[in-house]
Image (tube, rainbow, N blue to C red):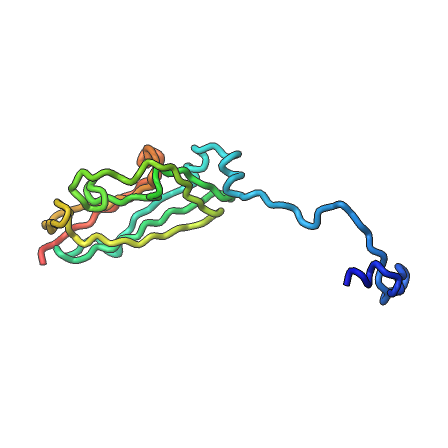
Length: 180
């Protein structure tokens, strides 16, 4: 095709609508490169503003459950800012959940995930929902679980950042376990 246009085989006329026009060689780029918005917000928007725009909420479908029944809960994280943000987390684990201050309902003092900073990206106005369930048991050994007794339990979740509760990136809800 290039040879046809560069040869004199085609009749070219800028005034005639059906005839091909002379090519104009310009050094102008055909498209503009885009800057990744997540990187741009990380460079231009301070950490406190990025965290200020995020909110976190933990909800359960009801407040009372029977002992031994699974307790489903939903964690919703929302970016209310009109631009995308990326929040640096302490590890690849982006958020954590707790039952009565026992991470992932485990009474073991296990090491957490590796300290390796990652980014948790939110588009403008984005709402991320995560569904989990607590099976009503606490891990007390590597292969041993203990059933929770009747009473009130607090299920909490937060972003995996320093001082999540102080920065409004932590939420909790209370459920009651009733006898079977």
